[in-house]
Length: 314
Image 1 (spheres, rainbow, N blue to C red):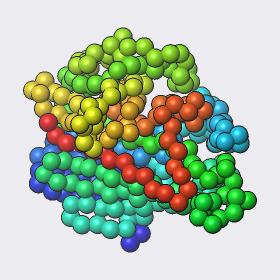
Image 2: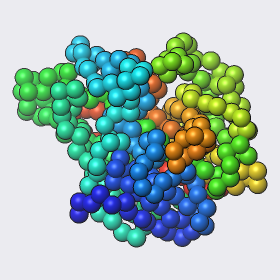
Image 3: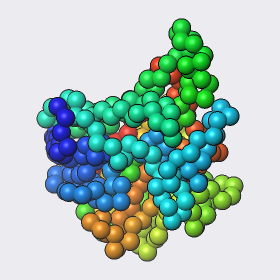
Image 4: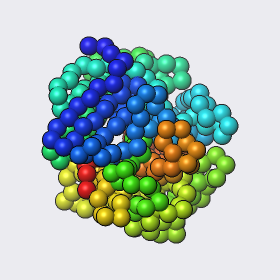
């Protein structure tokens, strides 16, 4: 079922387009009004793509894992950073589809610069209450405890460091961004060096950067926030971030409890296809997590982990 053609799915008042390039969200409409600033052909500015096995940036493309130094390609050469992992630029294989859902898979090959063999599978599904995604990541490497010799399952490669993010540009049903309000339950802001966008100091209260209900007129952001801790009783939709228009309608992004961080970026009017828009990027870890270890996940060999996120209309 291999195809490079985008897939359209629908349910109730929702329609969506899923792009095999990065297994991302190219478009999402509710009653024919956009919930994301999407695209129809070439993906601009990582719009809607998945970011793995690390989101955001790794300074100098260098990190250490279990005492072994690893070097990543610096895909953001002007800042000398390794940006957004490999999944966003991969072509995923369509393995199943129906009118309301599509499943795509990609096997990230073990390579010199990333020695952990990770297999990704994502199901995008629409229902009357909106769009959901379930991402399963499997570390298919050998498990030394299951009879594999320690020589073939070296400690530096037995478990994989891991982080994942998602890069949608939200739309409040087509309203200009400067007429909208961003509702974000952020606890702190992680200051970033304005030149390299890497962590540059201890966290500060998020309200020093944005309000809990931030009117977006004239606001320019490329900031990382730690989200409020979800209540103990929360379900898979532990975190919510909303973009509302003047009438109170808009888009609600949700993500499970592992997505404790969010990068918020406002693109300029000159941005191709996107124009002035706001990217709300839920992440499981902040920039430079491969080096700092902050909120970095560890995927054990021969094991799988699931993540859930999505968007609904307000």
